[in-house]
Structure formats: C-alpha cells, structure tokens
Image: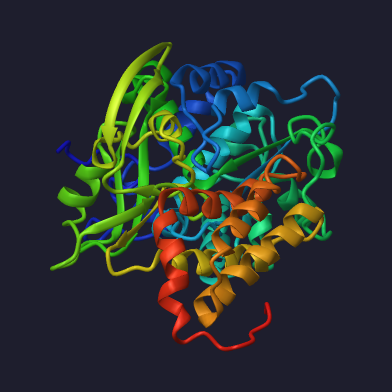
Amino acid sequence: MPAERRLIFQHIDEVGYTNDIDCYLRYGGYQTLKKAVAQSPEDLREEVKKSGLRGRGGAGFPCGVKWSLVDRKSGKPIYLIVNADESEPGTFKDRYIIHQDPHQLIEGIMISCFANGVKQAYIYIRGEFPKGAQILERAIAEARAKNFVGANILGSDYSCEIYVHRGAGAYICGEETGLIESLEGKRANPRIKPPYFPAVLGLYQCPTIVNNVETMCQVRHVIDMGGEAFSKTGTPGNTGTRIFCVSGQVKRPGYYEFECGKITMGELLYDVCGGPLDGRQFKAVIPGGSSAKVLRFGERFKGKRKLGADMVDYDWGVEDVPMDFDSLAAIGSMGGSGGVIVMDDSVSMVEALANINAFYSHESCGQCTPCREGSLWMKKISSRMVHGAARAEDAALLKSVADQIPGRTICAFGEGCSWPTQSFLIKFKDEFETYYEAKQSRAPEALQLV
C-alpha cells in the first residue's frame, strides 16, 4: 500500500495546529502568495496549466484550461467564485478544510485572483455550514489586517476583496450556473449553455471562474512546488493529490489524502479503512458521491483506458481500480467529488436506491420537465416498493423512467439523478426482481404512489 501523501492536509491534524492566522504563518503560510505577486499573472497561469491540475469539485476539468477560456478582451471585470456548496451526499472534505485550515483556502484564492486579474472574489458556502461561514469571515478579516487581502496587497499595486455568501441549502447551487443565479439573488435555476458559459457570461454577465475549495488549495501547492514538479505527482493526466471521504460500512471511515491514481479501491477500503465490519463482506461502492454510478464487488472490467497521452489495456476487479478520474471513468463510473460510499451485504440495494431517489426528487430545481417529473416518479416507485407494494414490473418501470432523463435537461442534474437508478438496476437486477417476491406476503391490497 502506498504511503499517504498529504499536501492539503499536511498540518491539519497536527497537535497544536489551529485555524488562526498566527498559526498558519508559523507554518509558512502566505509565503507562496508573496512568491506569486512577484511573478507575472501570465506566468502563474502557465504554471497551473503545466501542472495538469484537474478540478476537484466533480467534473475533473483541467483548471489551467478553464482559466485560459476566460474572456480577457471584453474589458469587463473578471470574477472568481469558490464553490463551497458541498452538497453531494458522501462528501465532507471541503467543510473540513474550511473548519481546520481556512487560511490555506484564502491563500489559494488570492493567488488565483492575482493570476487572473480578479479584484472581487466570492466564497459561496453551503447554507448548512453556519460555523464554516463564521470561520471564513474571521479568517478574511485576519488576512486583511496583515495585508494579504484588500488594498495594495503586500505593497503591490494589486487589490482584491473576498466576500462570503451563504447559500440557502439547495443542492442545485453546487451547479456553477445555478450558483451564479443564486449569488445574484435569484432562484437557483441553472442557465442554458451556450450562451451562458461562465468564462464569458457569468456573474453579472461578466467573465467568471468557478472553482472548488480543494482546487483552490491545490493551486497554492502548484505555485509553491512549480507546475513541472507538481505534474510529476500522481499519475499522467491525474496529477497532485486527492482527498477521499469514505463513509458507510467500513471499520475506519474518514478522510484520506493520496496521490491520484497511486492507490487502488481495494487498498483504500481494506488497508486504509480496515475492511468490512466483522462478519460482513463488501457488496457495493459508489466512488464519487451519490450521483456516481455504483460498482458491484465481484464484477470485472476489461478494456482500454487513457493514461496520459496513451491508451492502455486494463483487466480489473473493483479492488484493482486505481482511484483517479480516468480509471473510474473507464469502468463506467466517475471520481466525482471524492465521496466514497461503501455498502456491505447487510444493505438492501432497493432500499438504498429509494433513499437516494428521495434526495434527488427533493433537490430538483423543477426547471426541466424530464428531471422534475422523472426524479419524482423514480422516488414514488422506489418508495412504494420499500413500503410493501412492490410489483413485478417495477424494475423495468424504474429503468424506463431513468432512461428518459439524461441528455434532455439544461444541467447535469438530470444525469446525476438518473445514473444511480440505471446503475443499481443493471448491477443488482436480481435483487430488484426478487424484492417483489419478498414483499408480497406483507404488501397492502391497495397503496397509491406517494
């Protein structure tokens, strides 16, 4: 098993390490910002591009490429928004960074702002994180008092402010255009792309960069190490470290940071997390938050996958899959937000899916008919099944509804709500079919969809 490689979490758990600025400075805090403002913004952007850093919010889009798409010719102000609306079930890394090491985030934000000519940045934080918002407000005030935020930063002619904006607890605000709508004071309905690509028409119809909390912290380490050195960590096409949030039926759930692709699913769950609870066996795992497609222990995957610029053969069981974006995509799932949800043989997959469907039905913004109606019907069908009125045709009906949502909605929520149902039914079809028989003896005579 590879040793845990910590960049973002390297000091967080040390005895005596606190989230105030004096402690952060003692550990070398803001030295990278001092280094950054002595360089040109163009050089900093090139370092991030050279590093190969991919966004840690879910899609894994290259950070440097995202920055390069920003409209710098319109003359409009450029905004940066940090997406701290950590709403994906099974994900809790960003919250921990904010609570334990907020100045690392702020330093990453200020480096990113300087690199992109941003004079106003926002941290959009999940509404259920009131303590986190207070910590960030205090940290920003501390940084401003030390001249790391505000006017003429570190004696330069560069000025930038950071503002904290609390969301209202809606999952859809994690989608970048829905987040922008909410930040503007409107209902968080995602925008149609094109034309509303944030890099061109984002906040207040101005060029906007939206990056995740973990991504901003990684930027700090890219500039500290240099893009070339950073690109040598992890694996080709999946550079740097990744924070995995492991929850569910394992002996040692928690957060763990490893180089991308240097640890397999089996090493993470068995060696790091201690394996399944006594007397049980692993049954399934969702590798990237609840919207990622489920994997079934015991299945095998064969094919070709991307490794940097090359295509290579693979033949893996679930335990063999490297924990990086491209490997998980190759087997039909995704790295997503890094939320690893583990289920053992005590879990009913029908009931687990019913729980997931209830969540997505509640969180749909309702703008698109396939998503609004489809997520509700999936919730109704799976809810009816677990409440004693399962029918033989329910599995096929669920699959039919789920198949009609992806590709027909404005944002990716449609895919996110349908993928669990599609993958659960494919991987555990037998369980859904026998669930009807198991429930027959106690099914009420008439139970409506509720």
